[in-house]
Structures are given as C-alpha cells and as structure tokens.
Length: 292
Ligand code: NAP
Image 1 (cartoon, rainbow, N blue to C red):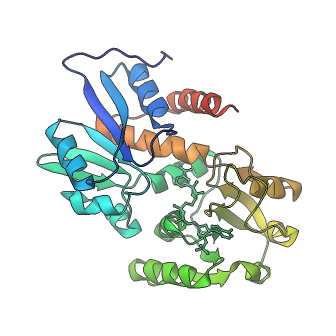
Image 2: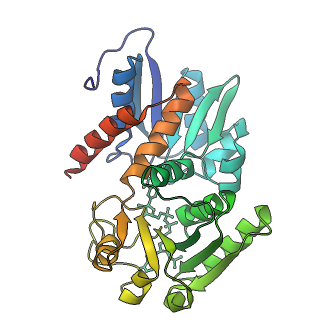
C-alpha cells in the first residue's frame, strides 16, 4: 500500500475532524492511508474547535468540506447544527460522522457499526447472545442501543452509579420495548447466570496512564464471561483483558472498533467499499503508530 500522500491541488477534497482536544487523534492515519491506497485526491485534517461549534459546521460547509468526524466533547451537541440525522445515530443520541448533502450535513454514528464490524471480524456475534455492558456513559449507552438493535438475547448494564444504568435501560426500552434489558450495580455481577456472557468494557477505568485497574477485579466475574471486548485501546492490553486471559477467555481491545468507525465514515464520504485487505493494512499502520 502507498504511504500517505501529501499531494494537494485545486481538485483536492477535504475531510476532517472537529474536537477538543484533537492532538492525539489516530484518524488522519486511517483516512490519509485509505486515500493514498484508493488513489483518491483527498486529505484529512484535524480541526481544533474550542467554541462556536455551529459556526465550525457552517464554515466547513461553506469551505466545501466533503465530510467531518466529530469527537469529544461535541458528539451530542453537533446534532443541533445538522440538516438530517440518520435513525441509528438519533437513537444513540450521538453523531461522529457528518456527510455533506445539498444545503448542509447529515449526521451518522459509525462508532457502533464500527464495533459491530470489528466484533464480527473477530467471530463474535451479538445476535441472540447475552451481553453484559460495564459502564453507563455515552459509549455504554450506544453499545446498549446497538445490542438491542441487533436483537441480543439479554442485555445487562452494570455501573458504579446504578441510577445511570437505570436511565440507559429506560432509554433503550423507549425504542425497543420488548428487549430483555436490566440495570445492576457492579457489585451484583454474581447474579449473572451462566458462563456465556459477552462482556463489553465501556468505562474509562484502565485507560492510560492509570493502567493498573479494572472496573471489576474479582475473578468470579471473568468466570461468567466467554469473551470480552475492552473499548479502550491505550494500553493495547488493559487489566480487564489480562484478567480475562488469566481466566482462559478471549480478550480484545478497542483499536479495531476505532479502525472500522473510520472505515465506515470513509465509505460514506467516498461511496466506496474498503476491502478486508485494505482494512488490514490500515490496522497494521495504526498498531505501529500505537507502538504495538
Ligand atoms: P463517560 O461518558 O465519561 O463514562 C464513563 C464511565 O466510566 C461511566 O460509566 C463511569 O461510571 C465509569 N467510571 C469512571 N471511573 C470509574 C471508576 N473509578 N469506577 C467505576 N466506574 C467508573 O465516557 P464515554 O465517553 O462513555 O467513554 C468510555 C470509554 O470508551 C473510554 O474509555 C473511551 O476510551 C472508550 N471509547 C473507545 C472508542 C473506540 O473507538 N475504541 C470510542 C469512544 C470511546 P459512573 O457513571 O458511576 O461515573
């Protein structure tokens, strides 16, 4: 695959990222590598937006920018500046990708389809599975909507602040009234029956630099799980993953989710399909960038 190209001319299309901060983003690696590989005349640039989000979106449209990613802290606030919002993104309540259309941008959420595609590639299917989600923040809520949308058999949301998990349950039930979803405090993990749970770690516990912690440390939890996904990708092996491995279970980090959220955005902007082989090359580049 070609290296990232720096060539720009009068026909170059621009995509970018809106966020604060954006200094450590991996997205340029994903998109500029794909552009070089496809031979697309496209550059991807991070934009540090401190305030005036609505003006940033308006300005992007005026500058003929093809598409934008949106990251922390704007994934929910950006919705007010959009012409249309895709149905899944609307249910999740967060947009991370803007696609240019006549008169403005349409908002999508590619984080969750990205997680789904990453899990599928690793042979893990949500359909008819028992899913335990750790956390009840923005990402955990999105995972709960994804799990309900993909018809998981049972969904359990465990959080330190159980009221937040209960609020997520209510939100999920608004769209999926018949889904089997319940909130529990983290300490109630022993009430999960069976040993076939797919665990999705969606808290910030264990993230660099505080790498020596897992949101549940007790071995009893990991015995109930058949496979675990940590949405954190720095460090590449979190303590949650180490505990899973000690229990003899499969463990994955969140780097592939990051890869596929980017790939799905790129496909939306360019109306193309990224092959598995292209994805694998970008993934290797991301791992190199992460130093792993
Ligand atoms: P958030 O809204 O701030 O939620 C944080 C969650 O972590 C809450 O459930 C919170 O529990 C819990 N938590 C924090 N400190 C805790 C502690 N000491 N003990 C127990 N629970 C604790 O964060 P978010 O935006 O949902 O992001 C969550 C994670 O997803 C982050 O680590 C981020 O790296 C990851 N992520 C990955 C990707 C990817 O592409 N792979 C994309 C986006 C995000 P309380 O409710 O009790 O406070």
